[in-house]
Length: 316
Length: 266
Image 1 (cartoon, rainbow over the protein chains, first blue to last red):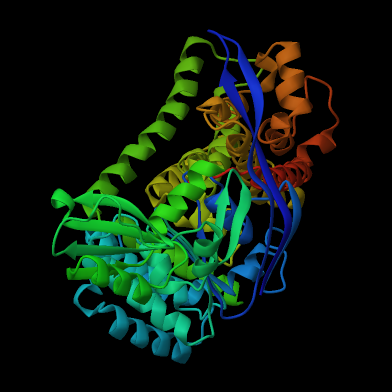
Image 2: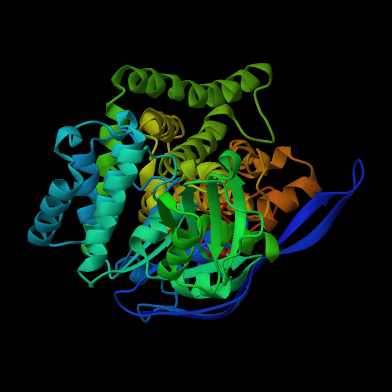
């Protein structure tokens, strides 16, 4: 569905060098990205600010012209075949609106039907589904400028889907939303992805979006792909470990050791201990601990993707 | 066909958006006409000081103003808002336009078609009508065609100039009002007989850039006067060709420009 090889985008920027002089400097925003995305995949595209996420997305949608490299989306080359590609993809830029500021949502949707030349019956069916799933009915007749951000984003999602796109590009779809709206958006995207008809590529800074939605994670930094695979693969590659937090009957003896685990913190006067499980199963670790000191309460924590990604950003 | 309906829908949306602020629309509609009225008054005031300017009478000069204003007002209403491109480029709002399945330029023009400029067009054509009456033109079939085609060619020419100068924004984000030197400056240039300008300035604007063929030369042909600057009579009929050339340049510059679009971060 999406093929990208050795994609590169450079910008020349003028930098102040002294009071009147300006120097021209070339900035590489995307530096040799290669990707292959199949139909129905849900891919999270993440990276720190300025890593080149949005630039890549804009090249995939035909907004920006690549400096070099090969792109094919739905069988089209984005920039030369931009208008034909546009009929096959849906785009939601979290910080830009596709809707008409002064018109009610209902009219914006009607306009998009003409812009995308969608048969009335298809339009009706898709709109009905979005209205139900995204709960649009209460603000269909409100001008877009009066909608809350959460309402507007639900409108944007609908707007991007009314022409039945094969690929949906989402650039930070949950940015600035409150918890409830975020969940509504995620649940909706999850349901959309589950049908398998739509390929989904989303950029985000909220890793919960990725954990909820995407099996595949592409991490980009300084314009290069630094990870492409499942979240589990990312964990094992960066040695993220599960941890065991135990509230003990009595303080942990100073000479205590648990084979295959490392103590990472001791709190409450030795009564609460956290182990990082490196090469031991949680069950065996618990058994060893119970036998040695007695355990009042315990919990096993999954590795935190935020930590892994933070490490990834600072490493590269 | 489908595309035409899409454009019609975009135009309808623009109309409804504008009319959702009804009072301000009426105020702008009337206020906008003021600017064009002043252009004509300037010429009339000039001729109160002297009976002839550059070898032309008031009535003859008004014919040039009329051709120029009618064409310019039409172009300004239909295409003039392309100068908002610099805002779209600076803020990255052009992204939203580029992901829709329609060419970007017609979308931009229809998205904020300034209906408030409608009265200017009416006024421009009224002045032209007045000038035609004042000059007792000796009508031939060729001149009838000319009076119809010239304002349209002028509109196409000015429209192209609008597009070319707006396209500057793709390379130079804060191009400011430099483009106006050629759009509004061009209109002012064509409002007077070009005989009033210095030779160097005239060669550049009138001949190299083509502004001399927009109103001055067609006016000569309508009046049946020989060009004091020596161009043959056929020059009066060249404005459609000049407009076509300008449109071709505009199309090329636009295509190159849009590939230079850099969007904004995020």
